[in-house]
Length: 440
Image (cartoon, rainbow, N blue to C red; front, top):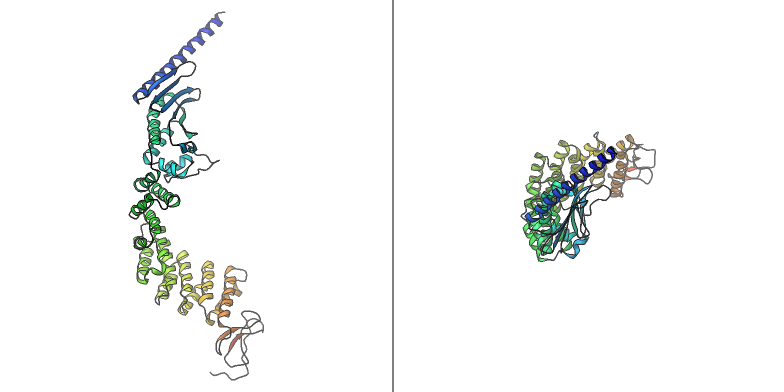
């Protein structure tokens, strides 16, 4: 009997302690609500504490259960807001949108109407949501803003953050203008870029887009200036040159050089190349090599040969390709030397280039390498180059090379006219001299 009485008393004590705890939480919530300017309209401390409050047309509900406290806010937000979803990111469902703020994008799944989402998620709103999400599980969906699974004591700190977000969402908003403001004012370049791209894609003819592009042409980020230059037509040519020469961002400078290409004077391309090589801006250097190769300038071969002989990796490969692009016979000797080197990938590129600019002098080195590396890519490229040279020199006059209809690479002195060189139908590599006398 005494045990039963003790159990009852113990249960009563626990119940009483729980009641005091619930009342304490409720009192803290009420104080927090009042301090935020809310009017408390309903409370309950039975079993689980609950509180409902309002400010204008905004309603706030706070409750607690065994899993922790929850704050829910509902307001007359834009109709499209019901389609907005922001919640913790999961690997199961990747986010529909990335706003360009890596810290925010890495934490939250973001889905819904793009223009509304990007307009809403300015720098201050992202900051508020980020910090609110540190206290519990943030979830915006079905037209509600909530944070759940919070320790009861964090509610007073979280409530003001959510109320600020709710008020920001409820403000009347000119979406194109807000996107333009984000594209110009956000402190994170990635966010500015994403808002600008959205304007270009969704609202290309809106006055807000035109103004945003104008301002973006002087943005601190070279990537944003490049994107703006692409959209403003002839006005962007000077900006492309500025970006190409600036070398602030290797990828941006390289793209600017590629866009300008033949419009880029040889001397300026060479100057950019020299600086890019000295600063190891490899992508820009490659773009310059390609532009110089296509430019057709007489001095191009010397520049490209120097790079081919002194550089390695991607730069050497691009220099070899560019030598072929010049179309100049002067490109043949350095390409033959590169083809006879040890680097397999360079042999392949050099062989392809020789297929474009090579003469009869390149055929024997190409054939030797093709025979040496029977199964390699260099062998395949060499045989293709020989075929290309054949297509250019067939029907040549005496003294020039032509490839007979038999096996590519067979060599003889034709019997018809002294000095004529052809690939005969004799066994591969056989060399014969015709019946006529040949001058010494």
